[in-house]
Image (cartoon, rainbow, N blue to C red; front, side, top):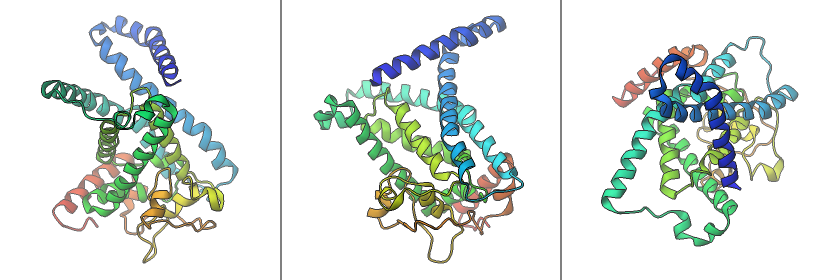
Length: 317
């Protein structure tokens, strides 16, 4: 099934390339860039599909039962800019340049040393016989890695200086998932991609894993008064569960509900808060005004400045 999905995706990508991109390259005399343009379009199309899926799932839910309503949604519009740049612009471009080079280097290095890193399917042969079981195992491991990346974002002062842009939002919606500093996004992509490479996630399964976790994260940020019940809350991260993580902190409340998809990690490592009827206001009372209400560029500059100060041991303010 995964192969069929991959074949269908490649067919769609090729059809769009021949219909739209290739004629433009001919018309502008840029056919020398055809191969790179094909790869780039794959990144762009994947981002477009993610945005569409998330919007179709989350926007009706927010309209149905919102936690908050705001007469001025300026800060939400800033988050939409973050999403468009992250999914359709900046991050795909960085990923295309950086990961293409890194993959070529890594493949060459492995060929030189003659070593093949073990994958989960090599260690546990039963996973070779059941692609869906293997996929679920990969999701669990990747989610475990995301839990600890999130813990580090809060624990390391220089990383928190970047991640605080995400937490400063006082009008949290499903768009807020992409409200991150570019450097933070790069670190996250390296962390996630590196772990996927380490455990041997097959290329045909990787996009589905990314999309599943992406939808889960966006839904968890949605402005909707929704929990999954006493049992469901302990199986899958809900908007209520993650909203407690974004809630304006009171003394002693720091560090809770870090999980992306599976709350079991918060349960095991004692960072879970399962108060089902609590939907606090969001934001960071210690963050400067620019992180809450500034535009994309001002927030990026402020994040770099705050990270620099944290690295030299000074308060970001």
